[in-house]
Image 1 (tube, rainbow, N blue to C red):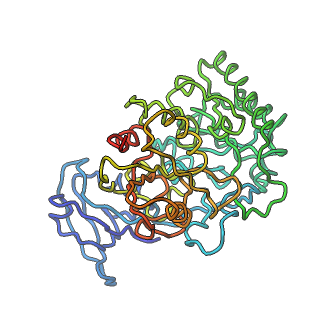
Image 2 (image 1 turned 135 degrees about the horizontal axis):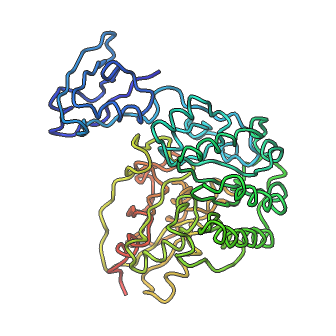
Image 3 (image 1 turned 90 degrees about the horizontal axis):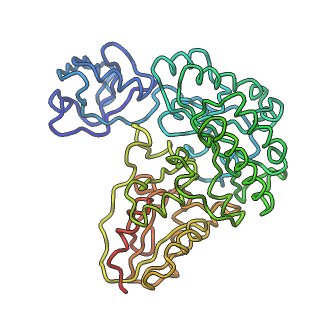
Length: 453
């Protein structure tokens, strides 16, 4: 087990006054070695702290005493979210995006996790196939919620076949345990055409209502396919299939609303784009419980762009939310520093993926010609990947190289983690200067106000 390392000190904090230094390894806190940042924050809440510190790689630790108020922030940022080993995933799903990554990326991006702690901290979805009684005891005792669980199918045989793991047939028993204990859990169904759509999806919707009605929400999302997928049975949805998925979700929303008083199940924005259906009204998303799963993002973005500050939801980096550069405090902490605004009174180009371009094109219709959408084709991943959160420096650079100099270019922060793209490129590698803008409609509106008319 590694020790948390000090990466930042708050000036004037108890930690700074006690003599901590950058790079210090926190070997123990009040005699305990924290397993993860969750336990770390519980330990540093104490009014009196005795911390054993290893400095500059010295074999022997030094003791530092800290006096502070109970619950007062210690004033230290640490290096990681998990200090013991991340629990890796032993499923082999044909639709897993990790298996669809190109070679040569950073090693951390290829790590498949199935760790409930990363689910709590970053919103990662876990299948619960590696969940244990000790895990359940900790989650329930410490009230570690919300958690996010991949369901995919309630039929045990279908689920185990999709996960390519026999434990997939039984691991949803832990979902029942968590719900019985009052833990907030959000579910997900990744729909693969010809595998768990059609009658299987109908059965899953019925099974969720029958067996897990206490779920806070369930997101129904399409599989993502990159050009590197080696699974011949995995393919994109047709328009007709997308329409049928929406029909199924809408029917079960009505049923859940009648029986539970809430819709419970929601379809991904991608399905409405694929089916060429209008998006539901904002109220239909019931507070956007699955916003970060791409459900209701368009509605929230449009409302915020129109001036509704209550709808200004940001966007996490999503699938790779916990790797390289992720704040140990979890997705609730900022990942990117804002960049200075450019000159007003000049044309503005908004960089986004193919999905975002379709949405923004409609929102900007009829506005100033000085504001335009710059559609960035995702050639790095290829396939069906069109979300802004998976844009890379190479693709953004190619798009910018064809754009005129002297304009302002706005880039959504969802594709960056501390200034770094998934392909390892940085803002400095781009051929034009860009402004990083929070990925919500209100921030975009403020950024483009004052553009040349």
